Amino acid sequence: MSTSMAASPDNHNAHHPLVSANLEGIEQALQLLGQLDDAQYTYVAKPYAQSSIGAHLRHINDMYFALMNAPQQQGVIDYDQRRRGALVETQRELAIAELQAIKHWLLALEEQNLTMPVTIKSETSIYQQQICQMPSSLQRELLFVSSHTTHHFSVMRVNAEACQIKTDSIFSYAPATASYLRSQC
Image (tube, rainbow, N blue to C red; front, side):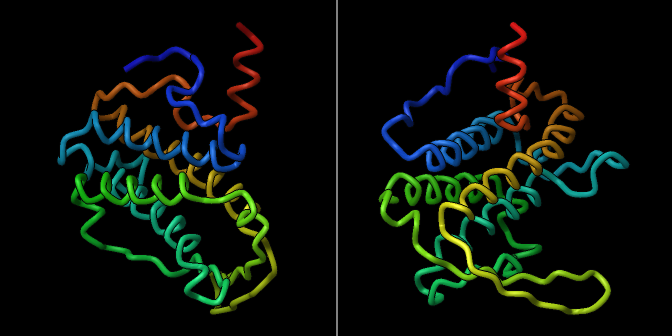
C-alpha cells in the first residue's frame, strides 16, 4: 500500500466537500479491509486496544446507518441504535458489503438534501440514562460522522499495525493534520 500523501485516489470533486470527505473515509476503510484476513479483522491488540477492527467498523457503519435511516425515522438520528455483537464484527466480507452500500448512498445524496433538518437523539450520561434531543442538519451530522470515523481509524490502525499491516501514511489523520503535514513537505 502506498504511504505517500498524494491526492485522493478517486475524484470526488463533483460532490459537496462533506460528501467527498465521507467518501474518502469509506474508501480508506475499504482499502484497509482489502489488506486484512479474517483473523486480523477480529484481532484485539490488548492492552493498547479494547476492540477489534471489526467492532470499530461495525460502529462506524452504525453511525452511517443512523444517517441513512433518518428519513424513515421522521428525521430522527439515533446514534445509540447499535448492533453490538453483530456478524459484521467478525465477517469482513459483510463489512465490505455494508461499506459499499454506504458509499452508494453517499454518491446518491443530492446537495439540497444536505440542509435537511434532523433531530439528534442521544444518551448523554454514563451514570444514569439521560437522553437529549437537539436540532441539527444532515450536513452537520455528515461532518460529525466523518470526524468520528477518523477517531475510530486511529484505534483500527493500532490493531492493524500490531498485525504487521502497513496503513497509508495519512490513515487516521484529521484533515487539518493532513494539511499541516503537506505544508511541511
